[in-house]
Image (cartoon, rainbow, N blue to C red; front, side):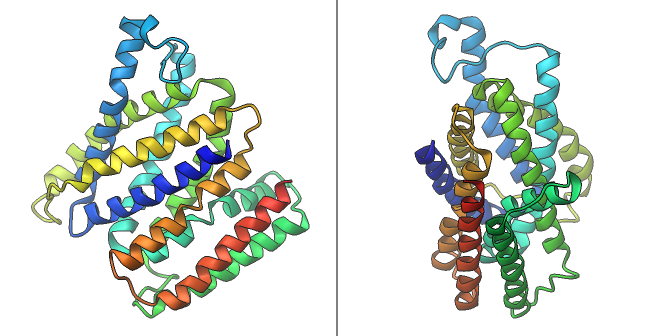
Length: 298
């Protein structure tokens, strides 16, 4: 389970770098549409082969079993949650440095704990409280680093979108564990990507296409299909890890958020982002906080 979670983290960090490069001075909705399209094209062959020649894949991890609407409605909800998170996240990624995006995204496990505390009345243990406190401190320090780059965390709409993306991502993570207990990973991953294409079509046609001449023009880049390739591989490793009998969503999610190290390194080495010294301190606090969350789940 752990090696799959670490693999997912590395792939997800590289995905963040390709996403950042694809969105730089580019139209957001077409990039997101092509991402969902290429992801669905990656999985459509498995859906078709599983239906037309089931014996070719049956018994393997690539087999996509047939299911009715009573199952697909849960997968469609997953698509809506993920796509909403992506829309917020893509706009934030276009306008914010990776070295700020990564640490904020890494606080998703903390958001899950805080949500459980406020909504369900759950009690946190000492280690979990330490993790939550460190995450709050790191967020404050990150806001100070952001001000040096002209980013006001209280009033910046891109920060708001990034936080919304992280919150919806945390909701999606909790929902994933429910889905993996009920349905095969390949069934969920293949169909939720297909549904996202259907959801993106009206968004592209109604929101972007009529305004395309008044906004940032779309430019095709070779990094766009790389977004789909690395995200598809990262999600496959993640879903398969969650489907294992001894999988714990808290541990898998924490390790997956370790992708912040990879994305932070890409922001520093590839995009030459600024104020790295103060952001490194924030990153270390986030990682220590994640370790305490791990201790709190044992």
